[in-house]
Image (cartoon, rainbow over all chains, first blue to last red; front, side, top):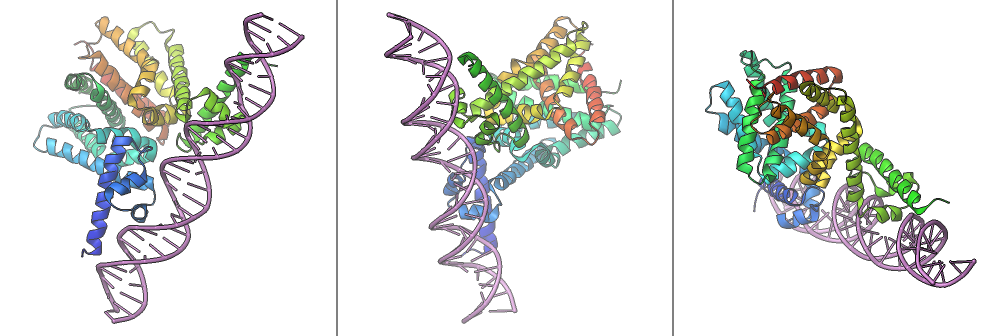
Length: 195
Length: 195
DNA sequence: TGACAAACATACAGCATGTATGTATAGTGC
DNA sequence: GCACTATACATACATGCTGTATGTTTGTCA
């Protein structure tokens, strides 16, 4: 017989994992809680014991996705020392990782609409966007780039890549679209360079 | 007694106008069709006579918003002849116009989530994004800029501005955020310039 | 070991969408 | 000008989904 703490952790993890798959497949609105708990092997009573609402469960899924994404970017850039290269590799890692349907549908499409832009942005700001901002800040501090505003640059680039991901994903030739995106991104970033 | 054509046009216009306000205020999910038709002075029977679903009504609203937005950009840039200035003024017009709550909530947040990214993107591509792309294409044809890919550049810039709009709207000092965004945008665009 | 609280399951209420059906009126052919 | 048809709605209902209230089992701890 399992301890209560184990049971709690196991049930929550199962619910989040199943919810992630269901939300990714059907979208938030068309993913029924009844279906989620059925696949997870519990009832809706369990769901509402751990989460205050369907939206609360969704919030937990978004948070997990954001952490996963940030972790992948950290792994990809950990061994890079040159800050400029680190930014470029980080951007490429973000674009590649975001080709997962989970991240697109939940993290980019439903996330802002369901949680509201501010709440979603807050979750993003604690993860992958934080990496982007600190990278830009570091380049600015080093005098390598001179953006008129680090915040504005961060939001513009974050938005640019979020949109690019969705475009790449549905492109006829995703690999080609990805390469083109990286190339233009480099051009755009070069515009921030100190003259 | 009004003609059927007049009646049809009037009822549809009323429904779309009320729906636009309700969707903007409560968001798509929390805007009840019963409330919409009540304010519009009809019943749900009328709604389902003209639109195949709540989503169909929403689609019509998004299309209207996109047309409005494109029209505003066209008005702002009509008198500009220099293509580079035209692009910059167009971007500023887009950012300013998008500060409307209707456009943010319906056009940027709920739109992609409800209609799906491809359908939403298609509507956008017929309106404001088309203006952006043709402007970039023209600059490329003139040899003023040399983007590695016009499509990629268009999507990156479109996404950048969509995100920027939402950031600016909730900023403590929106005017300052807008100016900073324009400044960084100019820097980024200068990176596309022919060396 | 017995009380208490956590971890669920069950049952129900309420709301929202979509559909099926009914009705009045404008339009049209004769 | 009159019967007929189709349009423009209104009404009623069936269905599905969320959230809540309540009941039951089981680990935990004094």
